[in-house]
Length: 126
Image (cartoon, rainbow, N blue to C red; front, side, top):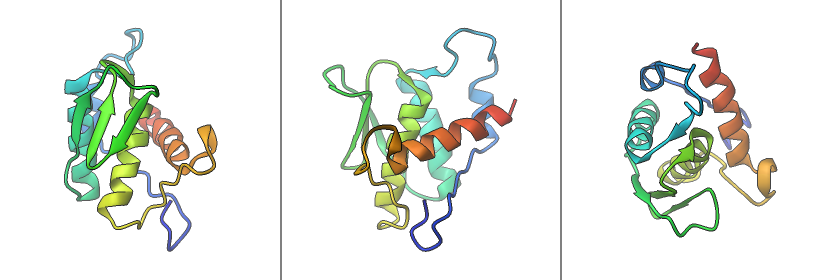
């Protein structure tokens, strides 16, 4: 959520659709490192920020993690987890212009709300 306006800035570039051409496949929304890199590259370009690193970390106690310009993920993650972490990166790159607070915890966090809103817009591409 943009701090100044209190409104959501959810962008789903059409180039994302090309990464998921066959939605009939089971678990099409699960991304490996290569696809996560492609998604993050497209999103970073859409928001005009630098791209974070994407690192596979099989020792995570959570779905994914953002720290110091790095998105840490399992070998495969739901795209919403990647979007949640990307939102933290967006907030960091814009000096806090986006509120990515997880203080409310769980699915009530602003980062998860962004990921949920992004998912809804993503599904509208098809």
